[in-house]
Length: 303
Image 1 (tube, rainbow, N blue to C red):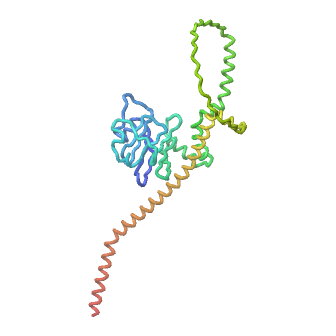
Image 2 (image 1 turned 30 degrees about the vertical axis):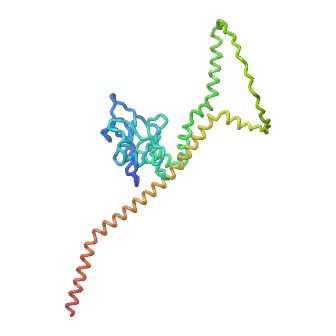
């Protein structure tokens, strides 16, 4: 087995590589990757930028890694050999890594630099690659998968809505069935003669507050429902928003990748033209000199 690596060549940051695998698999890419006392098959995370290790994590999970110029250029902000560590990112440029809900495999890797958002292509044959391929083949799945991932962040709230009444009913029936077999206990607690303490009364001055009559307003029933169950529906709405944002980021990412491909092709064509011109220059110059010399000889013979 080998590690799975997500990679992209950024115009200014260079080659960015995000690798997941066991300790032994990642040690083949990074000889200084930490080694535990006992062999473990739990997935680890390794992030390299331009061949420099900027992050090592002992477990997967949703994380944002700082890729600012200060972090990339400062060795003190990189993990030391044989140690885990990374710089948490809040502002762009940042690398966002998102795993599945069990933190067993990386679901997506997003690079955010200034006003651009780029999704890295998943490793060939990985579960994430199959997920991306399914989204590219089907417009329905292109909408469904990100929405499910976003709603999944508030999945506990949906479980409360759907399963809460069912579980409460089952527990109520179970208690009714068990209560008929339980004996009736009567516990007589001793009375404690607490002392009767009389506190002195304090006469505070009265303040003539103005009497303000506010208009009465009856809120609709749905406002009361939303206020009472805010802890349930708010995570669901946030999750749907995250899913919609993922769809928008996918579109922006594809546009950015296409622009980078065109720019790279233009630079490659320009470089090839410059090399060809440099190789042809001596030949053209020699031909011009030879032609001028022949013209001189022809003129002298005619004279």
